[in-house]
Image (cartoon, rainbow, N blue to C red; front, side):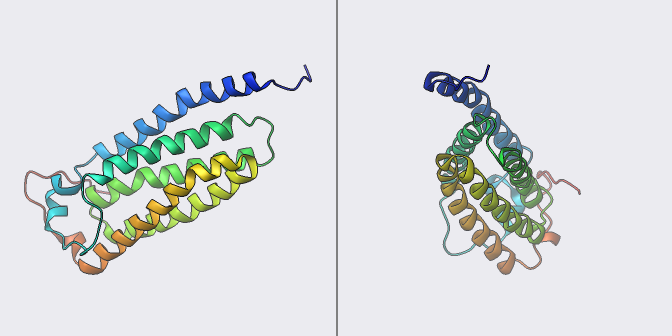
Length: 184
């Protein structure tokens, strides 16, 4: 059984992985976003002073959906590269960045921890960058699929930083009674 896999076998392996990874990453991202109300649906968030420049609210679910599909495809590519040197480290880095990604929304919108969320998104960018380089050593296409994610994390970090700067008392603001809060 030391035969080299055919192109069809490699494509089939990738497709099997993608059929699992893409919906899984989308589901995880959706679940994280649904734990607490976000954007204008969040009473606490509506009370915050907003930066003068930022993407329109409709862009966030659209962009995140696209990014989660790209993340799932990149992961499927790397998972399909059985026997590749550094594959385990790359998958481990991906898992860490995914956990940080999923923690940010409940931390920011639910627990109202703007400063802590800023540290999380900066750490997320650093781990996502390391993941991109690790993926690139295995399959360059997988790394390129993460580039839009890195760009969006820069935007998210800048917005988080501006909100933190404009709202030094954000953690102590009391949202309307009908809002949901998460206590950490």
